[in-house]
Length: 238
Image 1 (tube, rainbow, N blue to C red):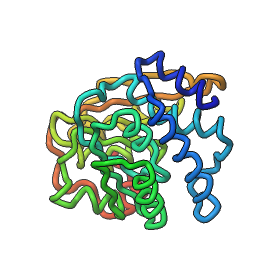
Image 2 (image 1 turned 180 degrees about the vertical axis):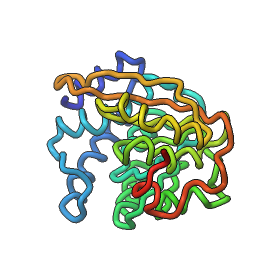
Image 3 (image 1 turned 135 degrees about the vertical axis):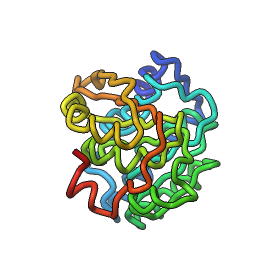
Image 4 (image 1 turned 90 degrees about the vertical axis):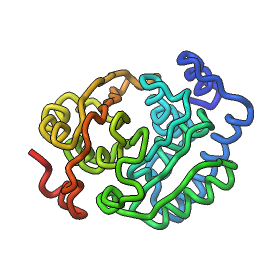
């Protein structure tokens, strides 16, 4: 998917990109490739692949969830900025908070945000478990989003504590979402969530399956969650 195909593909979902926004994606791609030579950000570096598998894939959350209104989004484990930075470029009114456990990635994201002239973007070097126990951030976000971070049972414990009651947790997953949701049903309930959507689609041009899982936060998360760093992954809630 070249940049022009990327622009046209988004138009099908009523997302119209200006020349300035297209230039932001171009700068994003260039910086991703440059920094990837210094730190490991992605195994995907070919332009057509990045536009499809990173940029388009990240924005797919907006195909199934309305992001046209002002929202504060927390991106857990954003890595190279996916999915929140592509979403921020498309929807500049969004406020973004990014949490990542690696300082080098946070440095890249800070410089990227400066180069793209993004406003209302905040970066925190932290483990998600610690961040979710911080009173300043716990249950404060309208939307918590994550892409390819962990299994749903683990991801729910990292993300739902950050989501305010009446807010939503959005997980960008691959083809395995139905099985993962079945395994994480108890965890989602315990953590105060309720599954309201699991939308499947295929990436254009390569037809690989993707899923957008939407979980509404309907109750407060018990104070014991998230547990200490590493615990959710070693011993997922059953």
